[in-house]
Image (tube, rainbow, N blue to C red; front, side):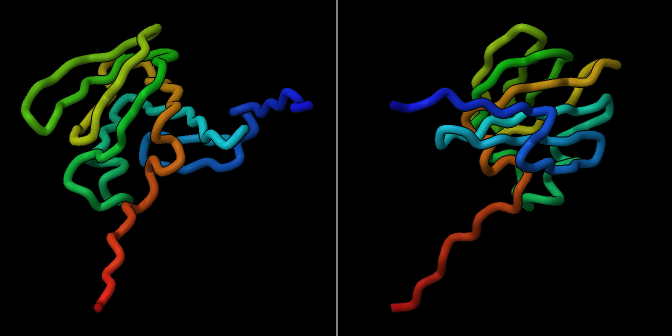
Length: 127
């Protein structure tokens, strides 16, 4: 019989430190869950882009906003804001930044495994 398991994001398996933020992750039941805490002044293109080295964020985010507000600018020019209490899907191809004076705290359930890690380079195989 399977047993219930739990982990606490206050004691994460890994913490990825960012300029003006951090991303804490736990893996349980084969799923990685992340908590991003981004301080006022945090912007993906300044805090994460130097790590992943992509033109825009390629994360496919699905999660829940615990607190704060985030402005999202999609590569196609569209924009929107997400805030406390909202579940959200942000597809790949965007920049984002904290709005206001409150930290933005986000629980990530889809792309937490690879968020804020260097982008994987395609393998080059020679025939």
